[in-house]
Every structure is written in structure tokens, then in C-alpha cells.
Amino acid sequence: MKTNQFVALVAVAETGSIRAAAKSVGLTQAAITRTLRELELQQGVELLERTHTGVRFTDAGKSLLHHARLILSEIEKANADLALIRSGQVERLRIGLTPTINFAFLPECLSLFQAQYPNVQLEIYEGLHGISLPHLRDGYLDFAIIQASRFISENEFSIEPLLSYQSHVVGRKGHPQRDATSIDTLNSMRWLANFPAAWHINFIKELHRDFRVSPQPSHIVSIQSAGLLFPLLAQTDYLTVLPGVLLKAPSFASIVEPFSAFKSSTSRIFGIAARRGNVRSKAASAFIDILKQVIKQHARNAQSPYADALRPTDLFF
Image (cartoon, rainbow, N blue to C red; front, side):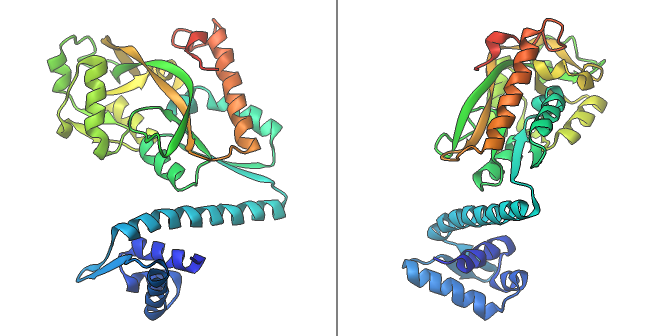
């Protein structure tokens, strides 16, 4: 198998047709067709089926497409890393961080990390499942700190537990239902979820497990950005579920508040997720060590704003 064959396969998947794929990579339609036909002959399987609306991937095609994307992603990363070395920057680090880490601990971590590793090019993405998991899967992210939940395939990813936390049903400050005790009241409300729509059923199951609340799927809006979720939460009567640690962050204490009757009796876990088999780089290990150091200091400091929500016994390190 050759790189140009993978490029052709991915181009067809992203554009939906041979003609559009050829245009996107600057080749003729005949060249793309010939490249894919050679690949099919080499592997002895049909990868694409031509239809009146374009092309459709066979099961074999879907399987190879997954690997092709991973391989091309790794090649892109290798080229980028070599370019950094040539320019004097020795390493690139791409990570995803859950909003709790971003708002509570990232400012301290970032200062310490950049002081120790000034030549590492750091890229930080929102650690929401709908964003992080695809980027972990294709090898773009080195790791992500996200909720370690049953939504994650153990066959694809390794999860290192970081800390446990309790979650709360929350709404804006002064929410008209903030003192509600009725499950029926919360079932009738509208909700914001930071999971893809395909996971709404799982989200509802977790709400029922933790709070006995089961809103209708049509009452849930999927928001794949903290930058969108929090303004909506602050300016509407929508509800969501947030970690207690996040509620103590200065950015949130003044705009949202927990519903006192709906605090989870069970703990959830933030974990360090990576593609299974991924070798952690020196920069990635250093960032994680610094983050653990910052979290541990807050957990042990009675004067920390997170003291009520974060204890040494909540940590897995």
C-alpha cells in the first residue's frame, strides 16, 4: 500500500465522489480511479461501490479508510515535528482539557510548563467528548483529560484515573426553580449537554442514575463548546450537570448555582485518555506532572477556593 492510495481513499470519503476527490488533490478523475483500482487489486477486495449519487464504501473500504486516516495523520505529525526541529523548536504538544481543568487549574499549569519548556509548541483543545475522542482516534491529540465514562471504548483508548468528583444539577444565578425538589419539575425543563446527540440516551441514563431525572431527548440541546454552553446557561433557564470543582472557579461562582436538592451521591472520574498503544512524549509527561502538582497543592490547601470540592482522597496520584 502506498501513501498516494491512502490520500485518494481519504479524499473520496471527504468529498463524496471521485470527481470532487480528484479536484481536491489536484489530479485527474482518471488518475484517482486508477489509483483506487490498483489498491483494490492489490488487496483483493472491493473498497468502493459506485451509485447514482456518488460512491459508497464497502465494509472493507470503511476498515481501510480508518487506518488510512491514522497513517496520514501520523505522517502529517512527523512532517510538522521535523519542521519544528528545523526551525529550532524541538517538540509539539496537542492536548484536550475538560472545562473543569481549563477554568480551575490551567492558568497555573500553563505558566509553570512554559517556564520549563519554552520551546515546545503547545496546542490546547476543549476536552469535550465530541471534540476529543475523534482527535484522539486519528492521532492528532497526544492525550485528553475528560470524563472517564462508559461512552469510551476500552479497546480504543487507555484511561488513567486522575481525580474523582461529585456532580450537581445547576442553573443560572436566581433560577426560578433553584429550590425545586420535584423530579417531575426537572423532567419538564430544557437541558444542555456537552455530549454528541448520539449519546443523549446515555446522558439521560446518567441523569437517572445520579439524580433520578429523565428528561425527554427532545428537551436536550447538544453543545460542543464551553464557550457556547456557559453563556447559554447563564442567560437562559436551561439546566445542565457540572462538577463541584468547576462551580468553585471564580468565573462561575457569580453566574451559576447548584440546585441544592440534586447533588450526585456517586462520584465520577476525570481521566487522562490516550489512544491505546500511544507512547507519551517527554513534553506530555511533563505537562501531566505539572498538572498533578497544581491539583495536589489545591487539594491540600484549606485556603484554596476549591477546598470544599477537592480533597486529597479524591486524587488517584
